[in-house]
Image (cartoon, rainbow, N blue to C red):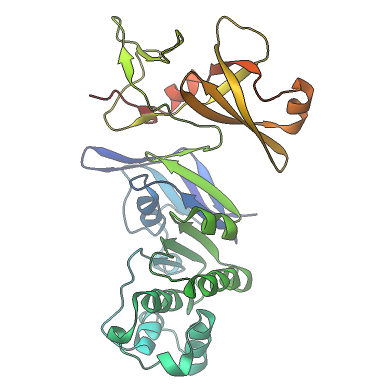
Length: 338
């Protein structure tokens, strides 16, 4: 697949706050990419940068090979914001506005088709004024106004916010139709984990403005402390301590992301010990739930390794953490609580 977007070391700040700090990644032609993450993780900011509505503080977003694409290329990109917003006009006027701006011709057939596609009966809705619509109907009209000109890229920010149980499946079918019939690349930022997982072909997870692997990244909820040499350490309360080099910079209200680098099935004095409390099969992988003192973490492994190790619930294991991971992702840190 050809990349539509190439993102290179993208950084975005608002004032002194670092909102995005991304390594290189690509978005491919015709895929439906999901962006998951909590509030403040950078999802909406990333979409706005992909739409060229904002300028990064570092790095670049290249669309079809251009970091500063022409107006004709930018018009291939449509974005739908999290809050539905319509012109103070009829549904029809809202739908054809984008075509008029582009100098494109339109037909009554086009208007009827997109309304039908988003689950709104054309004859019933085409002449309705924007004030006569519910929030869910407004959301679907906004979506219809974006797809009427067959965009090459469709950026959707929390698109299901205003949809009810009736509107959601129709909206999902419309997204699938657009992707399959227009060969549109679709990028969706959403809190709705189950819906997102069911509609996307690939998913990335943002945390504190960085892409992480949620299956193998976890966070301790207790207190981190500094020793006399200013090294950061975590006391599990059972005599075990995890130390992190003082070169890791700490910022308030962030969390320390950890990943497991190695698991030992025999005692290792350089590792922390824990106990396997649950085992779950997930496609070709095994998810292990591990308890270290009062902390519970999860990690994945391939089925082949799992069967070779003959792992059982209640088994004691020894774990080493990927400290290098922290040093290369300095904003993924939990941070000392006051």
